[in-house]
Image (tube, rainbow, N blue to C red; front, side):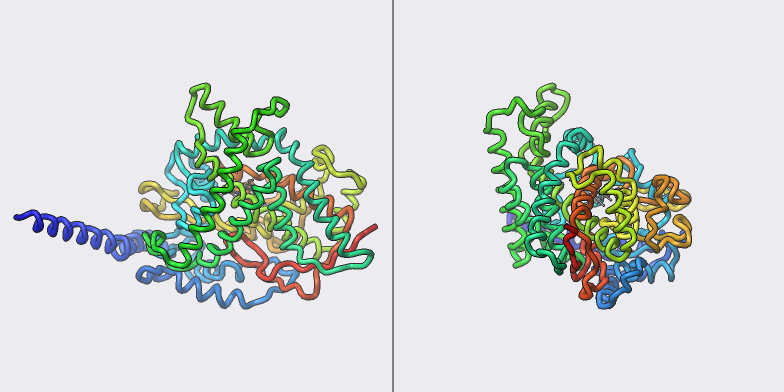
Length: 519
Ligand code: HEM
């Protein structure tokens, strides 16, 4: 065979192999996986070529998003996960559906959730996200990586979230909140005024995170996050579209915009880190590079390297971690605060109780860590808000090998979906009033509030539990305390109760409220 002939044969072999691989992924594997689950009694909606169950999800979601709920109804699952509601009533609490060509096993039993989320042996890992989501959350950042890489990152990042470090951040959280409230005060004079509070709180959290993450480089940090917010809005709109592997490399208008925004985020963050590295170390701060998140990360990264006990984080990895903090911390905390304001607007009696508690413990002073620790009712309301309107409504893990949960065989690569939003409303675990707002259920702590202690999963659990949970609780408590000291609020008649799943649980049409200065 001549040279050209060999090239032709090689080319044909490569093409045939690719076609075979694609056929296996798109046709044969879905057939086999469905069959294996059916044999074990696990049913689910039909698999459609390439789109899996996505067309049905999109159709159901479109109808659900046209509905408006009663403001007193906290039973929101029909609106945000209509497909899960329909399929669990047809196929039972555990069912299989297809997110494109990815098999997803939906399991709403908190005991299974605990088993899967507590895994330390690598049987269940975070699944690969779509390329656009990877750009958002940082492909090599804590939230998406697995294995030893994850261990190394978590070890370096953990010290930035110790209680001592977080206490130092309360001042910054308070000063960002006060500047927002000063603005409200200027706008409201003595009378009440309508404010779109969801947008306000998103801006507040962007400020707080930029402040605590970047300290003196606050302005540049905000620039990076502005581009990331744009990227986020762009990607959220495409999350339920069919994804064809490899399509992320094509110069489509969507991809070009994603590349452009991602480049801007990365170059701004790189500049911040470089300028921090080039600034002489400040011996007064504990680390030397600053007490903010970025300073602690650079310092820790260096320490691990010098002692020779492990590899440090390189520049790209620190950039990815900054993106992760913003992605994982911004909308989650802003939405937690938004839903808490919503609940306090609907349940005015709780707004009054919380204000009384805040005035007793803090007076009109800016709260410090000790005062915040005494706000028991505020804590209970926040927990109830995180239960009913958990910003992260589901968690995923992928089986890394053929494995078993109880008697159920789980084929390798099956993605397990743990729906916090359903578990948090199960009457079996939370009682008959599971869909009602009742902060008093937390009076004796989380473990006494439910029949099963791990039925509260707002921050996840196990080794990959939210690293920012104390940060989020401190930021929301600080903001709520300062708002209630100075303002009262109620829902604007324009508000439509329309929670939706936009990566994070958010109000579809915002949260307009009427705020009134108290003094
Ligand atoms: C109310 C606010 C928040 C909620 C409800 C929340 C919720 C969660 C949940 C459920 C997980 C676990 C996901 C899983 O197991 O798949 C998680 C992980 C994570 N969260 Fe949060 N989060 C919040 C705030 C924050 C903040 C403020 C930060 C950082 C500044 C943050 C950073 C992270 C990171 C880095 C992870 C991944 C941890 C790992 O995999 O090791 N979160 N969060």
